[in-house]
Each structure stands twice: as C-alpha cells, then as structure tokens.
Amino acid sequence: MQLTKQHIADANGNLKGHQADYYYLSQKLIDQGVDVDALVQKVADFQVAIPSWALGAGGTRFGRFSFHGEPGNLEQKIGDVGILHALTQTAGAVSLHIPWDTPTDYAAVKQIADQNGIVFDAINSNTFQDQPGTKHSYKHGSLANSDEAIRAQAVAHNNEVVRIGEKLGSKTLTIWLADGTSFPGQRSFQKALSQTEKSCKEIYGELPQDWSLLIEYKPYEPNFYSTVIMDWGTSFMLANACGDRAYTLVDLGHHLPNSNIEQVVATLMSKGKLGGFHFNDSKYGDDDLTVGSIKPYALFLIFNELVYGMANNPQNPDLAWMIDASHNIKDPLEDLLQSLEAIQEAYAKALLIDQKALEAAQLNHDVVKCQEILQGAYRTDVRPLLQKARLNGGGALNPIEAYRSLKVREGLIGERGKHTVATGL
Ligand code: PSV
Ligand code: MN
Ligand code: MN
Image (tube, rainbow, N blue to C red; front, side, top):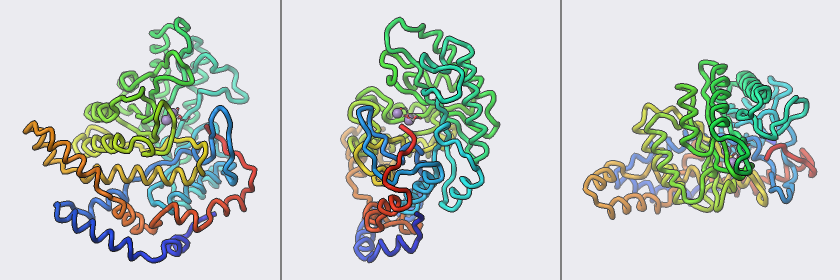
C-alpha cells in the first residue's frame, strides 16, 4: 500500500483552521524575533530513522497480541516506513537489524526504498541471540566472552553486518551488547571489559573509512547484575579506544531512573562523541514506550542540549536519529506517528528557546529568569509549525487522522492478511 500525495491532500481536506492557527502563532513568534520560516525548515529537515523491529507488535515476554497486517518481510517493512514518511515527511530512513532483516534481493529492497524516499541509516548487529547455523552460543556473552572463538564469531558477525550495510548505502554500524552477568562473581569485570574493548577495536579496524561506529550502553537487562557496557562513561571509553569515528549512542530508555540525560548529552557533545540517539520513553526502565508519553518535559530539556550542541559543537558529528520502541497494545504505525510528532514537538520547542537571553540570565545568576525562558518555550503550542512543515512537503495535516480516514491498517490487512508476524523484539 503506497500513499500518494493526492490521497493525503484528500484526507487533509480544508486547511482554513490550520492557516488561522499558523497565522496567529507565527505573528506572535515574529514579534518575539523568531525567524519562523527558518524554524519550520529546520523541523522539516529533521529526519528520524524507523527501526525495522518496531513495525510489528513486539509485545512483552508475557504475551504478544498481533495487530494484523504486520509486515512479514523486509520489503513490507520498508513499505510501512514509506507510509509513515508520506504522512509525516519526517521518517525518511530505516534502521535494519541483522540477521532479522538480511535482504535476499538487494536490488528489489533498494528499489522499494527509493520509491518510498527511504534511505538506510545505522545498521544493527545482533549477538544477543543465537542464530541458526552458528557454531557457538552467546549464552555467556559475545564480544566480551572469555572464549576467544566465541568473540571471533561475534566480531565476524559485525563485519558481515557492515558488508550488508555497504550494499544498501548505510554508513554506520550500531553495536548494542547484551553481555553481562546475572550474579555476583559470575565473571571478572575487568577481563570482560578489556575483551570487549579488544573486540570493538577489531570491528572498528575493519570498518570502511567513511563508516562510523556507534556504541550503545545499558545498565541492565537481559543480564540483571551487571552489563559490560553499563553507562555512557564506559561507552565513551570504548569509543575513545577505538578511534575518531567511534561514538557513543544514547538510548533514552537505557538509564537508571532519574538520570540527568540532558547532562549526559551535553557532556558527550562537548567532547565530540555523541554519535546517535534512540528515542523512546519510560517510567521504570527500558520500557520502549511512545516518545513523549511519560516525560515530555525531560525530552524538551534533552533537545535543548541537542540544539545547543548542534549550534556550538562543530567537533561533534551529525547525529543518527532513531526511534527505538516496542509496541504492546497500540497499532505500531499509530504509535510511531505519535512518537514522530513528539520528537518534532520537543525539537521545535527547543528551537524557540532564546539562547542569547538564556545566556545573559545565566551570567546574571538570574535563576528565575532562566526557568522562565525555558518554560516559556516549552509552554508554546508549536503544533501549527509542525503542520506547516508537513504540509510544505506534501504530508498530512494530522497524520493519525489521515492514517485512520485513509484506512491504512485495513488496506495492509487486505494485502497481507490477518495472521502475520513481524520479526523483531
Ligand atoms: C536494547 O535494549 C536495544 O535498545 C538496542 O538498541 C537494540 O539495538 C534494540 O534494543 C533492538 O535490538
Ligand atoms: Mn536502543
Ligand atoms: Mn533498549
């Protein structure tokens, strides 16, 4: 099912209400000295990769309730990302997970991606599951394993993922390791870390010159006592040990409760080492909930640091933006539409922060004014700006309403059938 601009224009219907809202807001912002056209363009330029594994209903370890019409192969997954992109104009990339998404026909996969305006962003390896046909098990670790042959197999898998990514035009490898321990004393922390460093360096050494490596961290799960790459500091250390094109990746769900993620972002960007981002939201742990559904103000504060870093840290590379979510009870595509909107909303609000006024207030130690500036931006309803950015690109005024009125899920069920299972978490 491919959505055309005409489908979407029909679903949009009358734009008068939007035009009035946009006019009112833009006049207010212009009076405050905001370059509204530039801001709308920045929002329109912000592209977020959709993870291939988030297009089906992943469920939880207690059960999985299908959403029907889920994509059964890579081509269909890219088709789903195309639907999201057509509606939002902000999901122009996909992030694949190998071996779940290993293409069988590269030309066909690339053609579908082209037709949908989708590029291949960071590609992910998987050494947290044993795959059919592999000699060794990752039960006791992969890149950190004490057994050299197992580490070599995990390194070879990462090299293979890069070769697959090269054929698709990807330029980034993301490593997330499940390696760790569930019980005290199970493994030497120091040996596990140094073996991980050695493995990462081997992978980095095989990367093509125009590729970068992103190293994700996570404090626990699936191991519950320790994780080898437990926090941003460990990831940062490993990235430094690898070299200039290795960076830390921040996944919002991979922090202990109440961590100050915006400070982590600021610290990494100041050192030029923040390479990628996984958006989601959480109440307790790595819940992988809809972006902005639990802590939208925290997301805004994180975007404040991202916007500051993008403007002031030329030493930091362009970031690989991605959603990393899982769906239990919502239609995955509707959930992703909500996440995309939440990301753009937080970004647009952060762009509204008057950085000069904030700096002046900071230098004056005017704590109240600092808070007023941040919260003034946060409390602005920026949705007409997001609508404008979407409409300029031929997207939907309201993506979820359009998705429903165009009966997209019903169309997908018609094409793919009811009893479908997508691969992924
Ligand atoms: C692990 O929790 C994680 O967030 C990593 O980003 C993985 O790449 C992703 O899930 C799916 O495997
Ligand atoms: Mn992640
Ligand atoms: Mn995660």
